[in-house]
Each structure stands twice: as C-alpha cells, then as structure tokens.
Length: 239
Image (tube, rainbow, N blue to C red):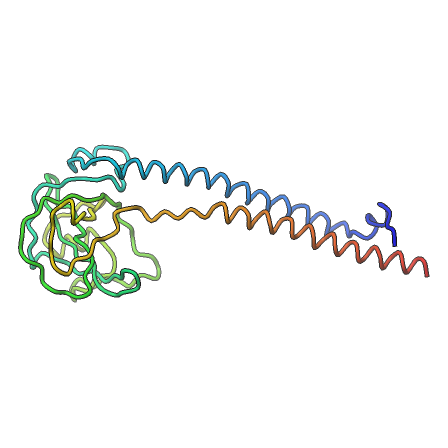
C-alpha cells in the first residue's frame, strides 16, 4: 500500500516526533563529545609517552615543574629498613598481596616510595638505594575503600598524613615515587615491579559509535512505528 507524505504526517504523533528529534540531537551530541574526548586522550597519551621516555631528573628539580606526573625522577640515597616499611593491601593480576612502602628523605620532608609488590610480608634486606622511578600524584580512597587502621598496621590506601605519623616522618602529600627496580639496581627477593606507566585506556571511539548507533536506531524504530501506524490508518480509511 503506497503512502503519501500526508499519510506519514498524520501517523506521526507530534509529541513523540518532538521527543525523538530532541533525543536524536542529544545522542549525536554525546557522540561528537566522545570524538573530542578521543582527540584529547590521544594527545594525553602522546604527551605521556614523551615524558616517560625522558631520562631521570633530580626530584627537587622535577617538583618545580607545573605537572611532573609520571616523569622519571631520581631521589637522594635512601635507607631501606624493615622497621620503616609499610605493607599496604593490594593485588596484582588478580593475586592478593601488598604494596611495600617506605619514606625516602628530601630537603623538605620525606617522599613516600613504593618499592614494589609482594605476596606476603617477608622482611627485606636492609640496604641503601639511590631510588629512580616515576612520580605519581596521591589518590584518595573512595567510598568503597576500607578505612586505614594505623594502630593495627592495616593499610588500604596511601595517606601521606597517616603514614607519616605512623613512621614519625613528615611526608610530602603531593607526589609519591614508584620505584623502578632495574634502574635503581634494587635486587630484592620477592619484590615485583609496580606499574611504571599511566593506566590510560582509550575507548572513546567505541563510545562515540555507541552513541551514534543509538541515535540512528531510535530513528529507525520511530520510522517503523510511524509506517505501521500509517498503514493501519490507510487500511481503516479504505474500509
């Protein structure tokens, strides 16, 4: 049954048509926004790759820069002592264990240093390192993160304030260091290297396709609905 434009127009509810048009624009807008996010993330990843390729810089010089995140830094000599270690609950590749943390002295307060991952609390040999690693900004625990219990030495997230108090050492609260075991020549049995690169995922193109797909799927459903209604109306009029 052939339908005219007037048949289509009469079959399309005005309120529904307006709602569909608004949703179509919004969904496409979200898709375009994800494309902008894609370009931003690609630039961020490229900048991160360039910074990660730079040689280590003395940490006090690096901290003067505007954004030293994930840059390679060198700290002054640091004593690794078992009575100065904090074991923070963590996991790596699905294996539960601990991040081993210790303070390393700086001219204006110690910097928390993440030595690596261990599956248990095996004591480390007392030694002196010249730490080389990546600077990372501190992240606060979220609503799902258990509360640190310093009195029980039960740690779940890095808190410069609480850990500094527990160790009796004023701690910088802006950045901590993730130790590069190889660059620091730190050969300690049981320690596994922590992540030295920023965990940046880039799925914005997939998200954009999803939003565009939803927008056009909505149009398809609306056209199908209007077509069936127009056919029904025409058949009823013909009868």
